[in-house]
Length: 132
Image (cartoon, rainbow, N blue to C red; front, side, top):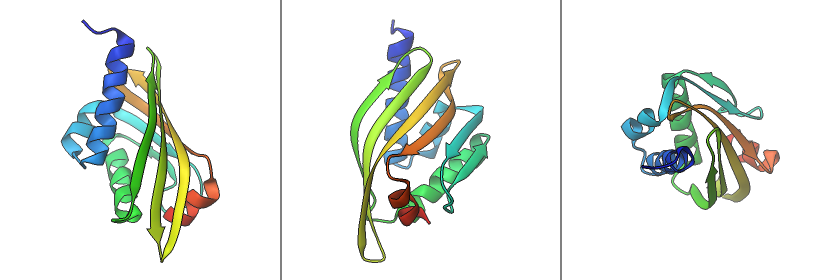
C-alpha cells in the first residue's frame, strides 16, 4: 500500500503524462469536479478558471497557443500529503523568435485528486511573450 505522499506523487506524474500525451480522459480523472486553475499575467490564457470543464479547456488553449515547437523539460516533481510541486523549463518559437523560461506549478490535493493549481513562471515577460 502506498503512502499518501507516494499516491500524490503518482497523481502529479499522471497529470504530467496526461498533458504531454494530450489525454483528456486521464487528465480529467486527476481533477476534482470543482478544481481551480490560477494563471498569472495578462495573456489570452491568464486568469482563474473554475470547474473541471473550464480548466480542461484552458489547458487545451495552452497546448494550442504553444504550437508545435512547444517543449517542456521536466526538472523535478515533489509531493506530500497536502501539496505537489512540478518544476520545468518551457521553450517554444513564436513568430520566428525563440522563447524560454522556467516554470513551477503548485498543486493542492483533496480526496486523492487535484483541487487547485497555481502556475508560477519565473519570467513573466517571457511567459506573456509566448502566450500574449
